Image (cartoon, rainbow, N blue to C red; front, top):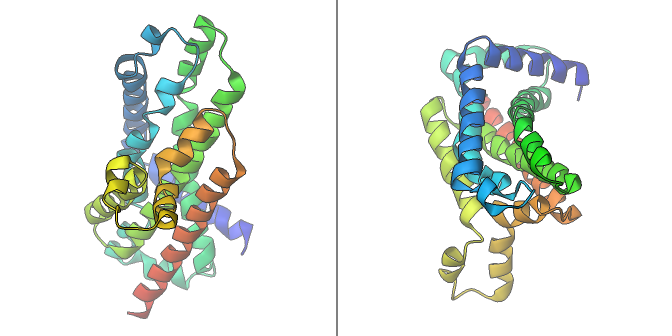
Length: 245
């Protein structure tokens, strides 16, 4: 693995995001919806509490549509245009290409999160929030975004069509979100307790909720990191299969 090659791929992918107005529109829409969900649907002012819980509570649902939109263009256009064959013949390496593209998408998602900083400033102006909890919430949000993007990377590598990749990513991520919801767990009434605990432990909501409340459990952090590694590995396998065809 070469960080120089990873950096080349990452910069190429980042350039593709900002080469058109789409990236700016995406960030603008993300900021608008984040503010609407926080201040209006989350009733941030009415709660009378100086925290960003109303802001972070909506992140899994925002990411369910925004992260697949970022990830769908990682590999599908390369396959559709035939440039993936050229990319794979360059002395870059499949692992470097997969990691470089993913890091570019993850940094782009991080940039969108950074631009939500005025919401943090607003809460700080109105009260005295626990900034450690807010930092933990941002970290958890970025880790969760990475998990969404890693899943999207795999789906993008599996399909030439960006819309198909987008929809597949939404479906898979939705399953990870709701796996810990009581309604879903009730469907496994026949299952032993260890299986119920396993299914609930896959939930993005449960893992992220603890971090967003300031409980930075290393198990939750490792969960998101392990999920990223797993789906990036599956991305590599999908590309290898496509190359063999």
